[in-house]
Image 1 (spheres, one colour):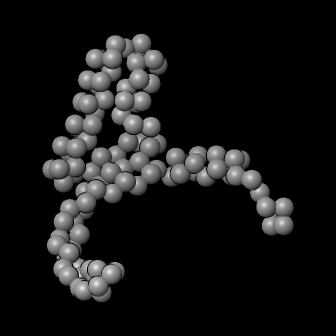
Image 2 (cartoon, one colour):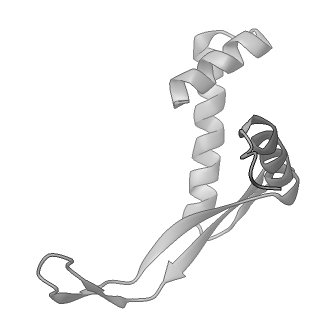
Length: 104
């Protein structure tokens, strides 16, 4: 699913025009991005949490040449799904995954 699919789904579910649905999605994404840029986290109950965190510099290695180089410190965004959603995903995958008859 891409952003256009999300916009289309919101159009159909809420009966909004494409322009209105697009503005809503863009507004939400803009708010999430600006909050994370400021260093705050975004928590959506029952869905998950985005956190901006700092990564320290570290030594990397080119796999072809084995040459070492320094990876500079940077800020990254990490998503942590909620426990409720994680359980829903686990239950849905249990019912769709074919079981191996030789395993209990």
